[in-house]
Image (cartoon, rainbow, N blue to C red):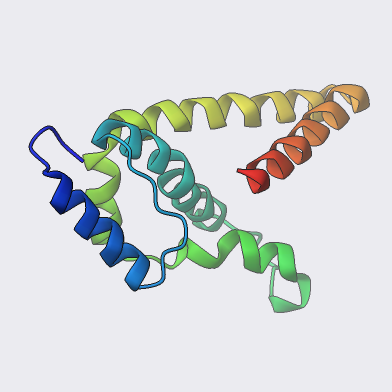
Length: 136
């Protein structure tokens, strides 16, 4: 809803969303929506695309399984549409991307340093966070 949305309009949109099968409908401000979508959608598309920009020259399907399929599924996207979406939500995307790059840097540093404890903690933290996400 916005400051000009009538209660009837909000109720209509809620009913429409539920009618087409949406089971989790939330009312949030436009800015909150865009900040969350930067993580749940925009960053996921960037990560998937990033995994497919370069690949090992000897790779073929005999080396792929579920993880490859799951992580790269959305890389085959409409580049024109996603360019517009990412640029439209630029500030939120850059914030999420910065945090993601920092986290990847921490993982990289743990691997480079052979720091099994730090790497395990990062991976355990990721698992805990994923389980928490599934409860929301």
